[in-house]
Length: 176
Image (cartoon, rainbow, N blue to C red):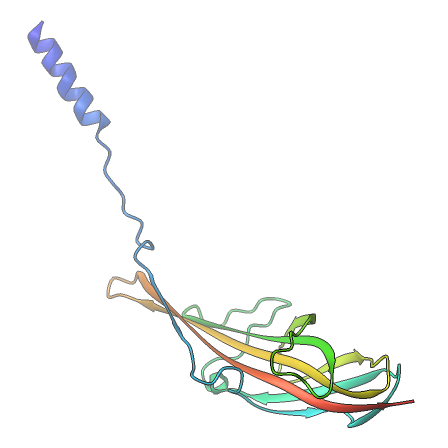
């Protein structure tokens, strides 16, 4: 009887032990570079009239340059084209509601719209100013890149995010 109990105990012990499988992605390190001067990191040009009419519909054209242009093109959102499995890049444009000029330094911006940017030159349609006076057109370009790093065994061991942001302010006079 002791042999049967001991045999069952050994078999039970061997069968109940599970081999612990370690998830290789638990130790991934994530890093991010935060620049000293936020929101002034891209070169840009904006084409929007200095003087517009109340309730007129206008279009702004923005063209920008980024350090990341030399590394990889932005993802093409429609088909989500991923040309490089080690790094990826997304560019966003945030449009805020117009603010009466002069702007106050502590004034809150209210988000009006956002979109992915697919080219270094893009248009913002349907810009309307509903009252006369001096206003500021407000926007923000956010260019974000992600790098995956792999160890010698081919397992991803870290992810690095880097971003560049540019505030866009354009003073506009609105007339009747």
